[in-house]
Length: 236
Image (cartoon, rainbow, N blue to C red; front, side, top):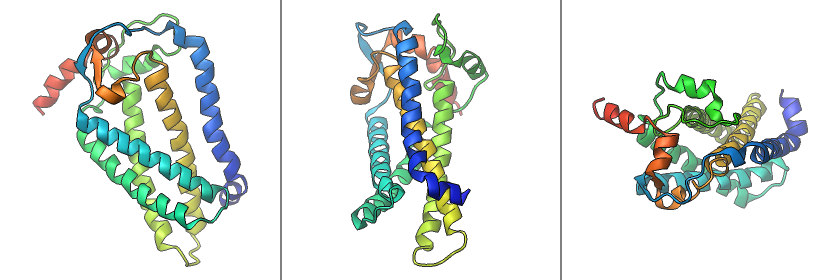
């Protein structure tokens, strides 16, 4: 596996970027026009408060900087600046990931109704779009949340091992680096899919990144169980 990764790591990362973009592009031109629009609805429901938006922004920015600096290593270009940028933002990404786990863990709990959302794949591949059971996060977003949270922990562990191995000829160094790189490529693909499904596949949701608000109609259509879940979580 290590030989394969080091021989084709540039190709692996090209695929990590291009394959999800191609898939999202096909979906965009095939299914997006059938999605429900709420552009004219008045946005009065706070979906994400200021703290949540700031944490999300920091996590997104730190991840972008980690990827950009990491591409120097993938292309075998030595750069002290890239190493520093990668190390600092790597820790920022990990720490802010722990912070998001703390603020969203209750919203990411799976309920029985999530099975229905998964059976229908969120209606992303259906011509008819009827509301599906969903809390603040739908089943797909919950899976994404837990996957990226686990990957963040994995990056922390492998990152520490790689730092400790600098300048030493540990036999497991290449193995750890291989798994670190493959996990990074997987995360890049997940993030691209997340961006597309969260924003472009659902018209009119881009503004939520800035003011955190959605319309009541949007909330009832996309997350009909949200209000009920909030009441349940208050009693936990």
